[in-house]
Image (tube, rainbow, N blue to C red; front, side, top):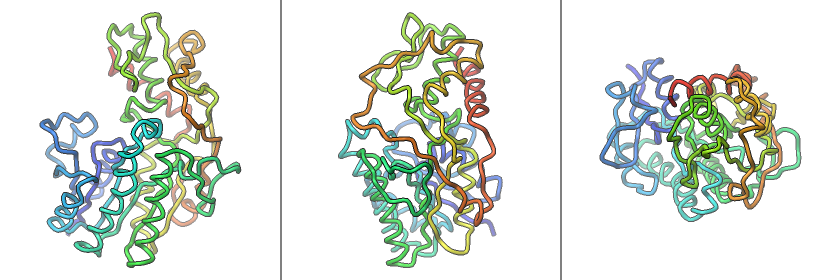
Length: 334
């Protein structure tokens, strides 16, 4: 008999790749979306008819509990969140309500209605904030310094709390930045590759950035924030396999998932623009309106425990990742 998996937040980059993986493994997949009047969700168009789609919201605990009662899933993956760190400054209350307290609603629903379910909770490298070290492990102290990171830190600690207090099989995935062609345009890597495509293809009406402005200005410029910010970037399609592996383990644990390398925003621009035969310095400018009130220092994700205990390691280089994202956006933006 096939297993049933509930993916909370299936329309996201991670949720859609996870659904792909679980279908390949023979799961029955139930995915949640927020209630609206259309199923026009690009990341899951190819999944329509293959998965069960239900409306639910992390703000509405009963909507989550209903699905636990109805489907009695073997595995629950909470991918949903207010997931844009920059937006958490303008929406700190909403971020706390969804990204922090939403996790408690999930854990309570599992505890009361499907205590046998194994739970994956997406946490984030942002929980480490400005920890002064080269690479983070599972033992690195939490030092979040923005509303998103603090909400994720609460979610991470509550996951451990429910594991230790109630015996739930609950795992926290401390995922460092992970990207793909399915990434939202509010994230810097996707902004870069979409802008490359719009400039290269001379798109007349580019999509809007997070401030509601055209992503590319009439004179062919992409406005970004702090260009020297460095991040550990990996490929989302590979990271969802790590999520699945955590729930196949004998013991519930938290794991850092990263590449143990780092690149700057300027590096991302250089690689992406060069792949399309363009010089990034002719097209990219830093904009004070896009700077964060606090910036996080460089920190890499030491994935050695995941490699040792789960057999997981990253496969795709950052250069190859940016290039495949450029290729996808060149095909999309014409």
